[in-house]
Image (cartoon, one colour):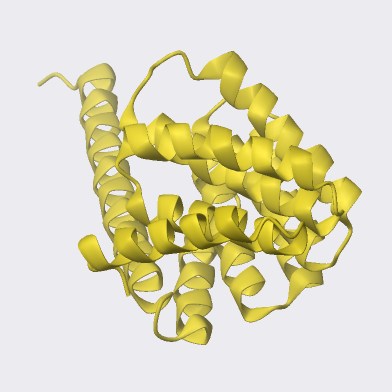
Length: 231
């Protein structure tokens, strides 16, 4: 009769490893489900969206990885839509802290963009501009591809920067950014943002008493919305 301690240990090790892999798959499936539920509720019921996002965070809060950071970003975004700006900023900063511990990912762009939006809605325009500019620098540094996804992000980013300059009554700079944004939105076929850009430009032309230009821009915005059936 012989007994192999090494063989028995390897068998136990395989069993433990398999159990951990199963638990990891189960956790991932549950996390994906909760995140999808949160996203689905964002347009209907923000409180429910936040509930599901926080449930997914409970599963991943101690992981210290970019997944937890992305969940913090989602929660912050939902609170931003609710108008709870201080709470939104708190979650965005938690996300940023986690992202800073890892190599660059696209999620970091979303965080800076979210932080900028918080400051914008709080009418802290200089801080908002600072974070939008950080977003632009990161995008330029890390996004080498010329994809529709990048073009769409740039279109929205430059639109936001233009809106800030308009709020600061720096109308020439605002129009400059709206024009740059329109170039990227056209490349991305982002007609919703393109329509908004023409409308934003039209409003500036009204304020600066360039009424013919205002009329042309607002008509262009309306025609895009009608053609693309944008509500």
